[in-house]
Every structure is written in structure tokens, then in C-alpha cells.
Image 1 (cartoon, one colour):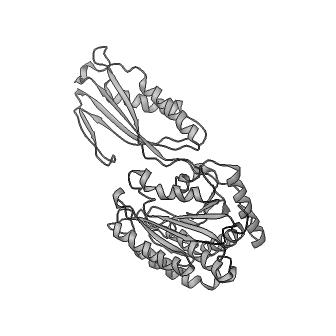
Image 2: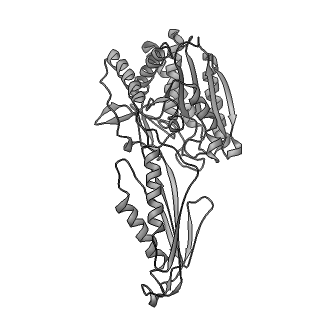
Image 3: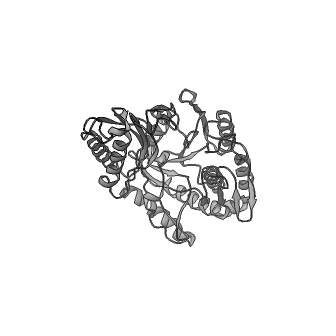
Length: 406
């Protein structure tokens, strides 16, 4: 398997370049579909039955679900990656470029580089014969960077695949700390909230008086600052990403813009803030939401406030002993390859991802993709040597897991 990965380096890079040069921003439905067809052409020759799951009802293109049936005795594996990138067709960053030991391009690491690792590792298994009896499903979502709605439909097939699996491997980027590769056994959640404060408008000369109150903007600022001072917990963050207020303030349908009007001599009648919430466990999420609701419900002089939580959110992937056991298996591979042992990444250093939707049902490991830098920004680059390292690790790990009894 190691020899095969090395022998096919030129082929793998040419494949990755082709994928990168096809724009597949999450909202470019045609582009995502084309990248899906490219992956189909790689998976079918390896004996996978490939299904395109149309997701246009959610406003997105769709997903690839590829199934390889083995002998039914070993662990059933689920591999997760994604077809889409954050770079839409109007982005100036569109093409692959080789710069020495790095490849630069949209999705070079996140996650077309990850999909390159998947294909390189599966081809290595195929060449060595270890794929023959392996039960593997590959789920490549088309909307990881900007999910379709409702998310219950957008992630329905992924959740179902997780329930069928005994172990799942996520091929987003390899984490590194101090120059060393590290393993990821946890990811935090990602959800959003909106606080809206309404108050009595009036002449600014009456601000802070018993009759006029503090106005909507001051009261919203007080609520936000109370969040900051009273919600602090380990691994919990709650960013405020958008805020506006005045005589009028209206949040747009996409909830990314606020149109506000006002004058300096008018006490503001409304103020709106949008933010996110990231936590390591469902208990931490619920506990924090309860605290936020209590803060918002405190009496406000001359004003009222409410908080709403978006129904569509990415759940957490909590650290578990089962996940640690998978990392231990990967470290066994590292030992046999003469590589350093991998410690655990602090989950606060990693964003939310698709594996979290199956984390309640199956043990998982994150970060089987290549090492990359500058993801989500023009100039995104992938460490080419890490593609080969990760493909070798994954091929050996999957070969061993597929021989273990369920």
C-alpha cells in the first residue's frame, strides 16, 4: 500500500488539480454536481456502487454516497468528506497552482485535498487486495460549507449511514501543533442565536429617566456584556457577529445584514444582535441556552427583550473512549510506519463538521485529510507531502479495521 501511494503521486496530484479547477462553491449547484461526477468516475472502478442523492429541495446540489460490500464480517467503515468549497464562481481565487512543496487553490486542502486522500488510500487498498473484503461507505456532502435547509433533510442520509457504521473517519484537514501531527477525537457544535430588544422611543434628552428608560441599544449592550461575564465555561464560545439598532432595525432574510435608521436625538426603539454558540457537549449547549434565556428575561427599564435560537445547528462531537481507541489504532499504524505518536487536539482549535451528525451513533476520528493552511481564504494551500503520509495511514488503518470483528 505504501509503495502504491508513492507510485501514484503524479496521478493523485493531477486528479486533485482537476477537481480544484472546477469551481464547486456551495451555491454553485452545477459545479458541485460536476465534482460529484468526477468522484463517481474514481469510485466505481474500485467496486463501489455510487448513488447521487439530489438535494435541490434544500437549495443545494446533492451528495455522493458510495458503497463497497465486503464479506460482512469486519467493521463497517464510514468515510466522510465534502464536494463543496467556500469559493463561489465570483471569487477571484479559482485555479490550482503548484508552488514547490505546496499546492495552492480553492479547496486544495478543504476538502478536495481530503477527497484526494480518500481515493489514494482506497486505490492502495485495491492494489494490495485489502479492499476486497472491506465494508466501506463513502459520504461526500455537497453543502458542508453552507448547509441546505432544513438541515434534517440535508443530513438525513449521513445520519442513516452513521447508524450503519462501526467506525467513521473524517477526511478534513490534518491538525498540527508545534509542527507535529495530532489526532482529533472531538469537535464543538455550531449554532446561532438572535437577541432583539424593543424600547420606548422618545426625545434623547429623556434618556435614562424613569419615563424613558435606557433605550434599546444600551439594553442590548448590557445583555451582550452580561453574556460575556456570566457564561464563561471551558470549551464554550459565543461570538457576537452582527449588531445594529436605531429608530428602525431589520434583519434580512439571510440573517447576515441589518438595515437600520436613526438619529442622535431619538432614543432607539429597537436593537438586534446575531451570534453563534459553540460547545463540546449537548449538556453544555442546553445549560448555556438556559442561562442566556434567564439573562434576556431579566427586567429591563422601559424595554423588552427576547432571544431566539436557530433550529438548524451542527451538534457537538464529544470526546469519548471509543474515539480515543480509534486514535490508539492510528498510533499503532504510526508506530509501524516509523512516525511519531499523535496526541489529542484541543477541540477548541477545530470548527464544526459533518462527522458531528453521526457522533452519537458511532465512534469517530477527525483529520484524516492533508495538512493545509489558509483554508476559507484566497491563497489556501495544501502540504503535498502530507497527502501521501495521510493516504498511507488511512489505507493501513482501514485495512486493519475492516478485518476486525464487529
